[in-house]
Length: 404
Image (cartoon, rainbow, N blue to C red):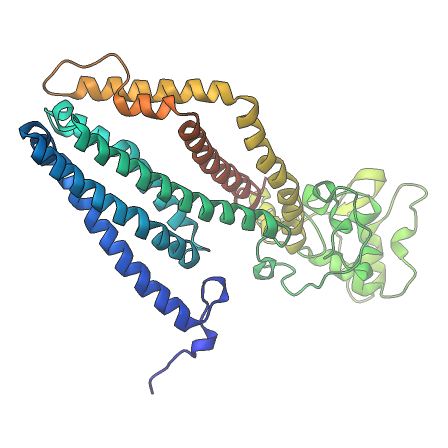
């Protein structure tokens, strides 16, 4: 029997009806294909030298070529914004598409000029003339529109990451405490500094006889806790009443956890290995497991991962604010760095040319980019978005993968 998916069960961008999404996809495909053909045609005219030849042949040929470029550019400038608006809707939850748009923008705004200088020995001639200048200007306009669309998608992705950081990763797949329910425990003022018994997955019934709680310590510090160590749970089940035998001896700073378990189990007399912890409380430890195995238990514990989520909630807003604040405070330095980077690229490309004399000065595109405050601001903003995205991914990797 053929298995089908009901239309209303399919996930769609922005929860739009599937029929609307299908229509938008078709419209986007048609407009994007048409714009790609028109952009490809004028780029072909630029790289093939036909625009440069037309500009140098006669005024009539130059005017005709210019009219063709301007007419195609007008079509692109009208249709491309509609296509990008549809693209933002369709790829609203796809940050990879935003990165692809930014890469395409960089390729058109700077890559075309690099290709003309690097792949052609007549690069300066290919870019000469009003027609070629108009074509390069149109490529800059297209790049600007692509950058705006990509920036919107990436900015939404960053905002969604920050907004949903409170929910954190799915903790239900943990090996230890997968089915634990949250309880209204006394919470720490700063979640990232909370101890295990101050987190919502610590059970009150276990906490009454938990040596970690009476020592006011953290289970992941001693590599033993209620979600992973059998002896802690045995102690809790052996003393189900409201009175806590573990409180015996608190005043003297000593709790004989091993004695409590052995005396409550008349049929089982086992020596439980313990070590003296904070406040003189004896904390059980398992000598049969290596430190690596114990660390692995913590990494798969729902309580420890809740602690990691609290740490992410603390550091992600700090990083999100620190990156743009750094860019604002060091904007002049970033402008200088951007100009030096583009200048160094010009020097490298010039030395890689097989013919011609490499120019020590900035190229025309570098002068255009660094000479416009608006374009410089857009470039710095795009780089800031990329840096911020990688910074948040680094925080996420350190907290949830390395478990630091």
